[in-house]
Length: 142
Length: 142
Image 1 (tube, one colour):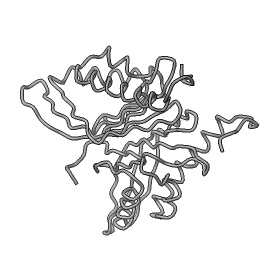
Image 2 (cartoon, helix red, strand yellow):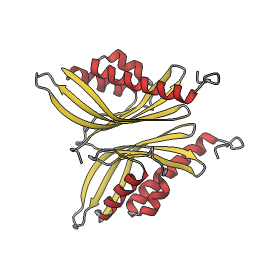
Image 3 (spheres, one colour):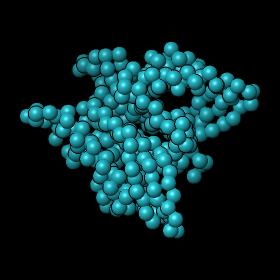
Image 4 (spheres, chains in turn purple, orange):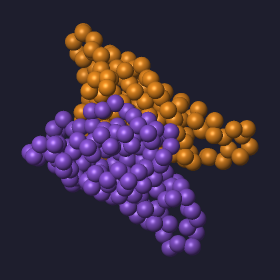
């Protein structure tokens, strides 16, 4: 529930909740853990994921399928997040950040890449759930 | 103000307001009209724009500068928007859609491209204002 009237600072609580949900998203991604990823997302038709260079995918079935495919084709993936900023407006919030990614496919070699992302969350009875993840490749440091 | 208690359907009104703000954004872009673009955006430090392939830019000064540069380097640009979906949560909203773009630079020839975008709006005293535009290139139809 969102009734935080007795709290000392509900705004700070909300921002902390969003940061925790955002961290859980990247932890699930690094762990390649589909159950943990399922916990992060709202399971609805209104959710959207755009992976770097991919078309937009709508709805939990397609979102889950994309994570399953990515996890099966990723040997190792690590994120260093920079320039993170959180905005909360009532029961919705978004995090904008840069993703510095180190990863390997099925082969052994590691490769680095950079993406920039917006992650949107909505607060419901189960806390903050992801409704949009849109990550796009950055062509090089401008 | 957001007190729409007397309205027959405040949800429908909110969605119509978001669609109008989103249309005004693409109209300003097609017209390459910096004043119209300035009307679309919230003028604050929390706003973010990510143009296709660009790094993320924060704050109204950088956002405005990027539009000015784009408008000066674009001879013609037209958008056909497809698969548009609006979500409203209280005083924030986001539109996800595909952008089918036809444009020319300073030369005459037209080129086509496709991007997918999330546009976030916040409702204030002046109505719905854009706070995030994140567009990314789609590598080809998957």
